[in-house]
Length: 431
Picture 1: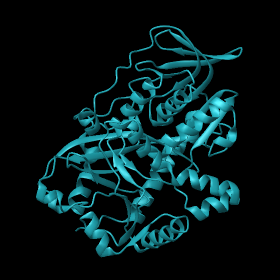
Picture 2: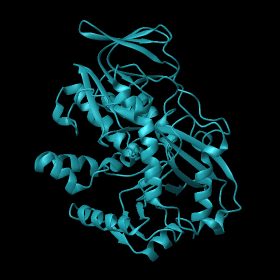
Picture 3: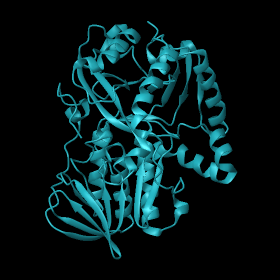
Picture 4: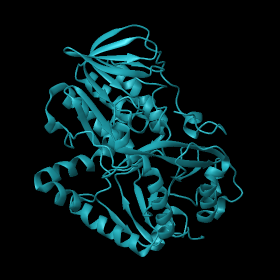
């Protein structure tokens, strides 16, 4: 995967806690469990296997957190793209409530692990505000408050005035507050998961790209670019949007889109007090949503969709720079210090997919914009299934690898859809 346009390092790489040494695999290994991919899902899987006494190794092509796990916006948002009533209607009462319980607690998993392992991860948990950009968005906010309140969440509907007070912009018609949400330094969290997994006995090797996975009798032979191999009873692949062509057809089951972000220089105290003054994070109800927050150094971050190709100039972030000053004119003279992006795996049904092309070879794919909590929780579930074989421990059913029809044209179609969504969303309202 190509490196992002080298204007400057990503903000998270510049401010993260030091990485744990994860040297490349230097010898052949025989072990019970091999995890491929050192992002949230892979590291969480390894941690939970190791906690339960399993012998596990993680193989990462770069370093833990290099991919989307170290390049996202750091917002910890519970739930799925589906609302509670939709989950129950789709899956039935029993399975729907089981899935709802899983989705409702994904953010808890993140903050519980940070506390349990005393991770050196800047974090805050004052809630997530979904800001309504239109009357339609406000109706959606009302529906979500009603539905989540029925399930014990202290959700709050926010008026236009309350939203403006909490966000520091008058660009929205209102919104709702979910107190379960929060924010982390995402790369520090990935590194914290790696340290926790190693503390429990897991082995982690960076700069170790996997080139082939082959069944050999009762084990799998995992080959690496260095020529070293791992022979494991079970393999769990958690590469998400960075899957490549390792498994035939897998890359065609999702679309990998770029999520772009910019960050200002640290704000002065007087400006900082006017933007998200109560510590919440926010994303809005646009189909092509915008998401924003302050980080632990007092920088304003703004994120959204970018071009499908890898960026090649500052112009690829220009739309976000314009949004920043439209929504928050108080920062118009504050320079943009960082521009970066990472890839997100979007499945056709906006749900994580679990595949098992042959028994003992488990694949997890689908970040869907809520990957911090979602993939942390998926790791725990994958570990339980890998160790026990009990599929009831999985929140989603195992499904065949089913490529999206006409996937080769998918990006062309998505470009047209994005243009239409952008038209429907309208411009950002000037504050």
